[in-house]
Length: 318
Image 1 (cartoon, rainbow, N blue to C red):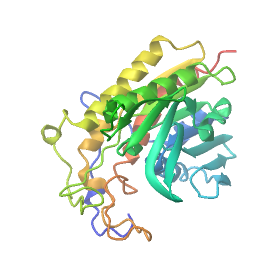
Image 2 (cartoon, rainbow, N blue to C red; image 1 turned 90 degrees about the vertical axis):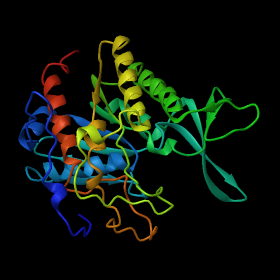
Image 3 (cartoon, rainbow, N blue to C red; image 1 turned 30 degrees about the horizontal axis):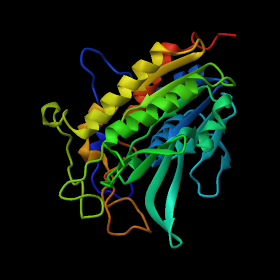
């Protein structure tokens, strides 16, 4: 909880219409994933999700940390009793990116190459049984998109001769090529690819760098959320691309959606805000990541419900 003094956000739980959502059961989870490898592929919000999962699983079995990179962004844990491997693999955009440098200084502006995957995760794909993908937060900045070396557009720019792209349309291009890459991976296992939908931020009275904060202590009601927002447009595109991927899926490929957006649109009370313990960016609030324990734990309730539908049947092909 990072020192956050209130705890009311722990008492609320997502309840779907017309059904009960069982709480996460680590024993059942380990039974489903025994002998498998699961990788969460994405940015720091993907890491946030993994941290929640680790906390839940550790009540049943403590993992061994067997790998971490120099920046502690890509990590691997092993649960020996269950013979289960859990990874979090850092990537900003899923596709290859190059940050522009001017006079020796980084700019925060990236060139994205749609015909090349980020090798950080793509090189590990053949050893993965469950790939949990997420992407979007790094698109909220000036980024240039390329295909076969040719510029095809830019987000947040108005430059002569360069097509201006909306965030959602640029993200859709990336998701499409990533899912196609996974579908056509010849060395891959019987892989289940799960795309987690967009996890909204809740900055109020400013952006992250202009004094924005998230001070609410109660969730929003269903009628208070905006389903015409960019958050929802991004979610809808992600769902659309998974549906498209299913129509062309090869025999050993399965594609699913982990749909968290609506549930999280209602939880502006669940972020660390000023209680995030950051030593390098003092004065800024965190309304992107989620307190733990907290609303993010529901993502693993959703995840295990999804895995149950595929358990013991979808991974028996030769």
